[in-house]
Image (cartoon, rainbow, N blue to C red; front, top):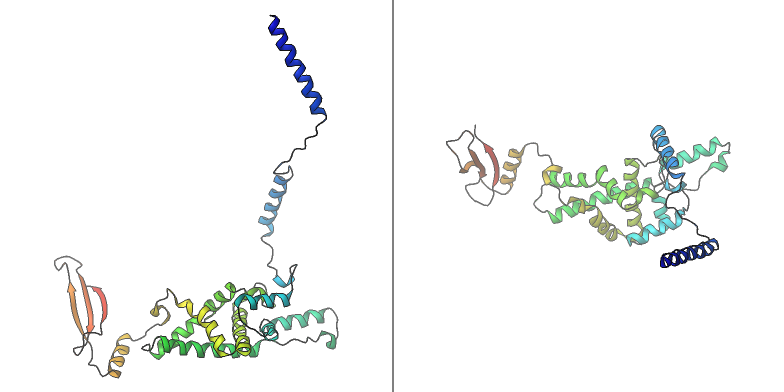
Length: 290
């Protein structure tokens, strides 16, 4: 009994002591989420659902934008020696100059004030497109010497098409630097801007560096592509006969290479076209006999 009283008195004394100590200590509670965050997030999500996503804004109209520094960074990132003036001109499209002039006229400025001391990239784009097609044609003939002229033209047309060029341009960061009247940048404007960059590189560093740039970034888009996905052969038999005639080989004849399951409903047959003079030229066609 006495020991229980002593224990209770000790616990009471310790509790009073802890209470006095805690009065002198200020503890500030930190929450990971504020109380107003849930309602604010719900309100913003509801507003986004009603109004839709905001309109895209060009990078040049966003904070912390320096066109000169961005152009220099673009040249350094690609490790190419661009002329900064030529590279700046490559990113200025005619639609941007026209929209800027109309915007200044709408503000009531006179013609002398609204005049812009800027040049568009039309000449650079035409120069770059001509060089790109010429280089890719020579590159295809050098790497695929037996490919016919129609095949070379189809490969070059595929590599210079708008989907391929715009895909490369966006991954190189050209879209953020393109000065265009519309946002996002249309594919045709981005295509001409990429060709203008090629023209600026040829003008700054020569045809050799521009060719290496095209080889590294544009010709690599052939990886994983099938030739006949790019080249639609209209008359394959006529093309084969013409090719054999040029090589002084006899006309091909059909042959049955192998067959299986002759007693079944759908026996698989392997057919081919063969030349009697040589056995190295085979064009296999797999089919089924009903």
